[in-house]
Image (cartoon, rainbow, N blue to C red; front, side):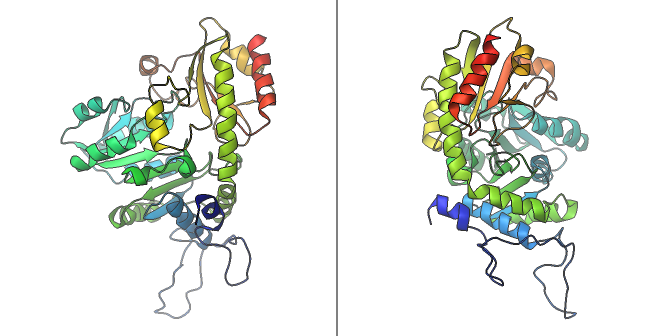
Length: 378
């Protein structure tokens, strides 16, 4: 089955008992056991729920993984993955990773002696130099959030396997429609399902996909033990959102390409971070490992330009948190998504006050263009 069809018919297709074309919302906390010694598939919805199971099977198929797990948020998914490590273990992370991932490592897991080290994941030699006996995993985003750095997933996975390390990839920006890290050698893939997979800014969800039974047993145990599971209703919404993923991502991609080129030529803009430009340092790798360049653009407004005024004067584009919705969303990483990262570190890697991140929506591109131009010229 082709990917676009798998989005609609993958996982558990419909309901065999009634003929319903959609998986029902099994809005129940518990299930009747029947006979005393019966080995029921479902007993209690924290441990397993048919609607959530349909979503988990679907995302595993889409990412070509062994098993999938659905969580109450992207950070719940990330926390579950990091919970498999022990005191003394170290995780190598991309230097401009999502601020929430940095925060949970820096402020939470550090309390239990699980350490991290930051490296430039676009530099394979730097990765090699950071590996020591305490390192147990490499956690990357590609493209990185928000500076759109590109990491060669296949090369990172090869180095990880050579050193008996786990490769973890946050694939939120690309989705399995554009990029499949497990087929490139990754062991674990994480999604904030809130973003492109849901696609409509109406749910909070996290997904984890693993490539083998050992990891599936670990993540499944953590999911059931800690209980940060996705609700049946949000599982239903996420399945529904995924059905139109290909259509939406095609539009996100085409709109973003137009907007990136517009911004590149604007006198108010110092620099545009977009992996679809041929002069982007990661362009060749991105073109090799993904089917597109995504719907996210980051850009620097010129020194002295009033970025606050620019953000406040947008009308069509929503100034707010998150990304990946059908509507265009814009944010200020230094004070929003990456505020948890220390100021000196932000400055060093380029998350400055004049950096803006734009999630290009699926509106008519002329309307997005008009809104940006009007706000830039005020």
